[in-house]
Image (spheres, rainbow, N blue to C red):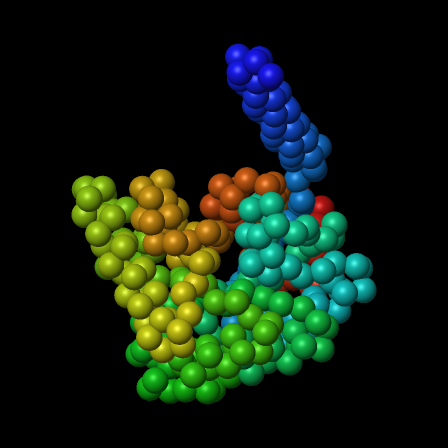
Length: 287
């Protein structure tokens, strides 16, 4: 056979294969794009509790009876709690979220999140995120541990929370949960340069992340803003620190897409103890 003809045939085969491969790849990409475009965002209301041990409910404290009433209401009305891990995976095109999804979160790291909440989560087959403040663990919890009325979680308690399989842990800063040092939470202060702010925030966040790794061999991927005080300048530090989700105190429902960026700035509804379950749920789900 003519060598020139063989060469031309070989080139033709290679060219045809390349065209077929390119068309196939384009169809796959196009199909994925259509699928993503066709998917409706998942509506995700998020509840924010704090302490759950009180005989006199306040704006930031509820009774165990109120929490159980809430969980029972969610269960009876067909709502399913989702973990932060599930939500993060969804944005990364892994898995799906239930239609009636809801997320439960708790701030500050009260001991009653372990002693009271975990048994209730087990009873109703639910999950929650507990965001802790490092200085509360190292100072308050050590001095006066395990009183369900006011104590904070110790590192041993946090390890037990994670082992329960019902709780994920979040970073609520080491020492920036304060209004008394010239800074509002972890927001940038007036007159502070971005460079100074980035260093202060990074040092604080990494201090708590380091203690998580040292004490229980775990690094949270959830960051919770103290007092919901968000600074646009904080986001680069939060991303660089490996956080994939941030929780705010802005009362708004979230719409989760397949885009990971939608998880920076999750809105939550504070569960005030001054509402009945029915009143709070009407606010949460009718917004």
